[in-house]
Amino acid sequence: MQTLSDPTFRRISELMYAAIGLSFTDNKKPLISSRLTPRIQRLGLDGFEDYLALISAPDDGGEFQVAVDLLTTNETYFFREPAHYELLEQELARSKPAQLRVWSAASSFGDEAYSTAMLLSDLQQQGRIGADWTILGTDISDRVLRSAIEAVYPEDRLRHVTPERLRRHCLRGDGASEGLVQMHARLRERVRFGQLNLCQPIEDIGPFDVIFLRNVLIYFDAPTKREVVDRVLTQLRPGGLFFIGTAEGRVPCNTALTTLAPGAFRKPS
Ligand SMILES: C[S@@+](CC[C@H](N)C(=O)[O-])C[C@H]1O[C@@H](n2cnc3c(N)ncnc32)[C@H](O)[C@@H]1O
Image 1 (cartoon, helix red, strand yellow):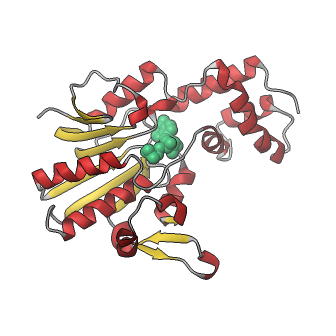
Image 2 (cartoon, rainbow, N blue to C red):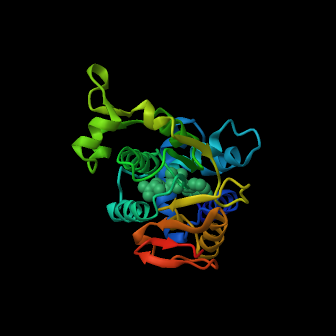
């Protein structure tokens, strides 16, 4: 197979940037090449040029989505960055909301959404929040969303979940499903998933009381980060909580926010 030429690399990058805001600097060329090569070979195509033509065509047979999945990282796990969940718990214990709407805005396989569902279910059980709470998970990738709806996970992804929580909220697989767990139906019915591209205008889906936008800004260049954060924050109610990944630095946006902790903010009332 031919190697990835600079012009084709640039055209693939431009396509991904225009469609979903993914920003690939020149040093990402080997990454693009290594992630797409097996797929190009499996499809029996001659090389990157042909693959670019395929994913640019209106009748791509879903291949553009496959390329997105190959080029993005969906890594996630339950209770990632536990300090955020602790802060959320403290805030909710203080405000005791009767109603709560949460958005996991780059949900990947749903670990963040179901972690939050476990926490809210437990707080409801203890009478610390009302019974009216729901969670929306959205992502650009069909593949992760299909998996999130199934809510089946390798046990290792729940390594930060306490044994009591595991017992309360998960069903353990046996036989062929040994080593897998599924979220209990009680939890699944509180969490909805849908496809949403953060780099395009979004219809009114809020207002939300809490928004997680964690570990996705890393894909975007500085202007896109700002646009995405401001766009997402239009869906947060005044006084609502906003989380980004702690490794993502200062939150780039024009919307006023009060910092509560690394990666945790409140929209002023
Ligand atoms: C690393 S995961 C983060 C998952 C979770 N928020 C966490 O912190 O564990 C990043 C997710 O962002 C999604 N993503 C990338 N670009 C996106 C876009 N333009 N719109 C929506 N989701 C996007 C990817 O598909 C991926 O599932």
